[in-house]
Structures are given as structure tokens and as C-alpha cells.
Image (cartoon, rainbow, N blue to C red; front, top):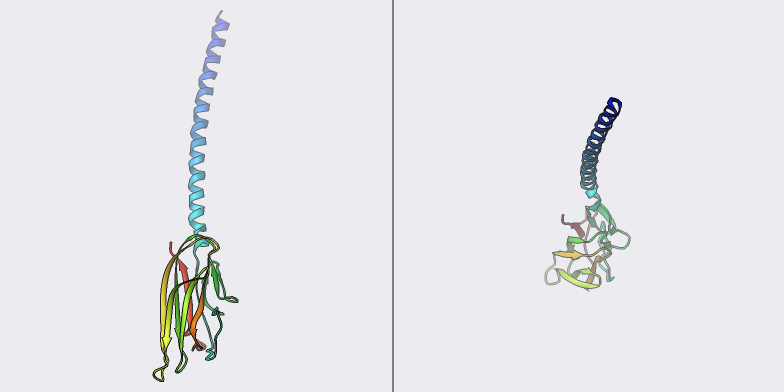
Amino acid sequence: MEYSQNLNRTVAKFDTQFTLSEHTQQKFSSALASLETAQTKLSKSIDDKSNHHAFTAGISLGNDGWTGDTLMFPTVIYSEGTGYNPSTGIFTAPSAGTYVFYVSVQSTWRKYIYLDIVLNGSSKVRATASGTSIAIFQTGTNLVILHLQTGDRVWVKRNAGTGYFSQVIPITTFSGFKLN
């Protein structure tokens, strides 16, 4: 009988220890889940740089006879993230969000030029530079804030006029960046 009581006490102790061990394991599992969540949030905040998109591009040489459609800005002055293609002059949104775009153009001597910032084929704002009435160069600028979806395209196109002025340090430029 005494042997049976000792055995029952031993089983009860093991049962209590097992229950405590299960409880401790649950606490550790919960703590581990919290640490994993914190690590994921930290990794996302570090990786958020991949969601930063900004560029400034210019033209290093004027062209007083240009009558093309899309104006290409091949000289990349600054670029972070992805999106702007200097070969085409087109910015393609790598992620959805609110973006700011700016264009600056200088007309050639005694000529005028109107440039539009275009979203997916639709003109949004126009910069005008007109030096036709007097013998000077004129600068036109404009800025637009647009909400873009992934894959939306933004570029600068000629609406009217002929030519633009620029130099080795670009005067005619196109810039854009995503607001965070």
C-alpha cells in the first residue's frame, strides 16, 4: 500500500511538472512569435528603401529644331529606386502611391515650346517657354502631384513649338519622386 501511495505521489509530481512544462512552453512559443513579428517589422522598415523612387534627369545639349513627340532626358543626375528609363524618357511606377513630377524647359532664341507632363497618354499640366516676341531665352516650369498605380507611365511630350535650350550642366530637366 505504501508503495502504491509513493507511486501515486510520484505520478502526481510528474503530472504537475508536465503541466508546468506545457505552460512554460506556451510562454516561450508566445515570446518567440512576438520576436518573429518584431523582426518582420524591422526587416520591412529596413527594406522600405526599396519603396523609395526618385529621379532627376536632364538634357546636356540643346536642339533648336526639335519637333519630336516624347522628350527624352538621357542624362541621369540622380536616381534612387527604379522607374525612370533614360533611353525612353518614360517613368513607369514600380509601386502604387502618390508621386510628384516636375519639368523645366528653356526655349531657344526667338522660339517657343510647350511641354506637357503626361500620365498614360493624358496631359496633366503644361510648361510654356516663349521667347518669340523678344530676343531672349525663356524658361517654363510646372509641377503635378499624381496618384499612380503600379505600371502607370509618366513622361514629357511636346504639345507645340520647336526646340529647346540646354547645356552640359542641364537646363531642361524632368524630375519625379514618390511621397512616403
